[in-house]
Amino acid sequence: MFAKALFPIDLNQTMEETITRAKFISQLGTKYIHFLHIMPPGLGNLGHAQRRLDDIAVMLHSYGFGITRKARVGSPADTICQEAKDNDASYIYIPGRCKNVMYYALLGSTTRDVIRLTEKPAFVHKKRPDPWKQKGLSRVIYATDFEETAERSLTYLKSLSSTVSDITILHAGQRGSDPVSEKRRQLNVNNNLEHLEKELAKDFAEVKVRAGVGLPDKLILEEAELSCVDLVVLGSLNQGLKQKIIGSTAEEVTGKSKCSILLVP
Image 1 (cartoon, rainbow, N blue to C red):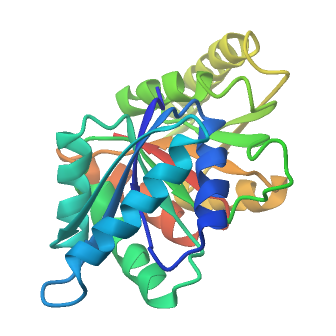
Image 2: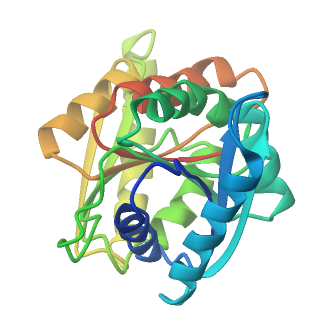
């Protein structure tokens, strides 16, 4: 599920940090990386950037990665999405906390557009990986509304079973308009959560469930903070009427969460 990553890279970061990030995503099952450096029109030297990417490729080849790379001039979000599509990337890895403040700000402002536009899953990495930590992910929230995008994100979640041990299944809903409707809603939620708990218990050591009433992004952020999770997995939509609800949830959680986010369209 995570075999090939499209990795937008800041060429001012050290080789050590690049290697640390590559090792982190290898825990997801990533074996191939397509590095992409984007420059605004009229700024920077494309040839110099390509040579820096070549140096990175040589180093990471020695760690067993398959590497492709490209330096491009263009709009960041459009370029990232197009490169991911053209290079058949499994997902887009968006690193956070870059040392280059300007490049980090560029990525931050671009992330929202990428998750709106992309047809690929996006892993938004909020924290720098610790080179001394054996596992970069341990506790994960799987946020679900029981719809199609949540079902697709479940497949990606299961592929993380070798590194993740603790899963919280979280559902946030709106209260029914009357007691009968609310009882029916609760029954449906409980049945769905029970089914998911049994399914995920086959792959993960510890599975918990939580259902709440209210705004999905608020409940996800509260649970992520309370449980000190490493990752939130949720579905996102890039088209259709439901984008107004699910899309806004994905954007709010991505923008405000302190932990990393995996968005699956």
